[in-house]
Length: 556
Image (tube, rainbow, N blue to C red; front, side):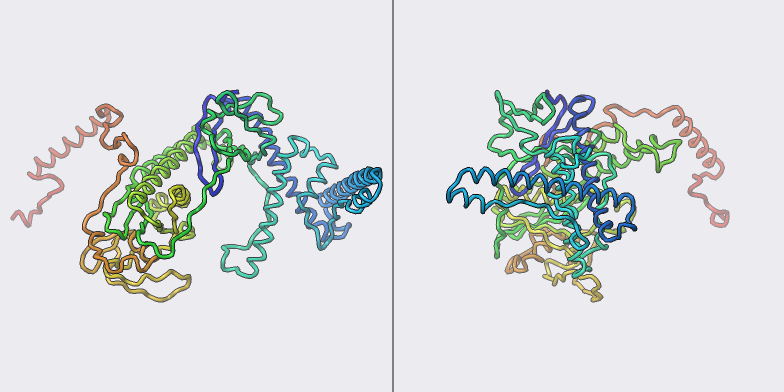
């Protein structure tokens, strides 16, 4: 089977690389039906395992008379499944023991002594939690219908996700009791997945990676035709690990995960050549350095415009879907909305990667030892900077860009340090003002020699304008500008536009509207003629326009 319509990208992670392939129901109907069955069954398996754990927790704390019908049914399944699993384990133990006795002699006696019967423990009031092995045995030996819907390894991955969620909850609860100030709210027990499907995980046994005749294929279990995923050369020198199928944008994303030997470089203690980056909206990246290099700005107008157009078009499509119906119960997922969201994600990802590689190539040419990027944790939580600014700032995923920058720089051997950037737009870099760190509940009023003009731009006491990237650098390494003449930071600034990052691209403002001359409609012409005639009447009456009326007192 060949995927007719697909696109792919690489996502770098520490030791892993993910290759993504998109499928669409209208192009790959058979494959998408197979994915639909598995992702739906994986979601059901996750919820069933969660249901068993929750009802076991509440049921074991009650007397048999106080238990609900769900708790009674779940405990019946649990005890029956464990009983059957232990009986089967005892049979296997007895069979192995008889085989060892047939060997005879001292060797047979040693083998018999080493044999152990693996018994699954029954839940108690104190030890009520069901581990992965116990849950898998319960579903297997009770022949649960949800467990039998698909391959056992896909089911087991769904059960592992449930158990992992509960273990994370236990750890968070313990940490919350010691340090409640680290959390915004009290940790809650894992809930049920309400979406129709979830990500289904396939091991290298249930989704085999095949190289044949210069091409690469994926062969899924219970799906005979292999899936062509591209040329073999695309996956050269890569070790296949597993595959995940994720419901996304009305279709399914095939995520192929490979091993990759990317080691994050160590941060030097006293670096000499340092690059500072301040991430924003209008200026997506403001870059400064301490090696007498000209600072530059990477403009963010293209991504800002793209994001604004996405919000506008999405609002228009949603209004058409919800017109004449209750907006809370109407369908908000259409083919057009899925296509719009997919294109936005693709453009954002493309811009982030190209910007990251632009910065890394610059850093490599300048022999930069470390990159310092400004980032405040929870900077988008409960933010209130105006309706329009909120829309522009919150909807752009800056953390994703910083992750891409970190691992892109790691491939070039350059470490990236994230630095808290409070007061970097208020302190004067030229005057070397002290930059304090923000603390919650701090009532101290810090004073500085200059003033902040706007976010990321500072006016010094001497009248120079400078961005905050240099202060971000200095906040991490206070000695960075010792003994330097820092006027080069404010004398001139280079601007890197959209056309500089994308080779061969042309600015949208240079193009004609819709590639043709705009002609006004009939209604517009009539309205314009009416306003012109009205203005002429006022000119005849007063000798002036109506907007420049002269009173009789002044005319006398």
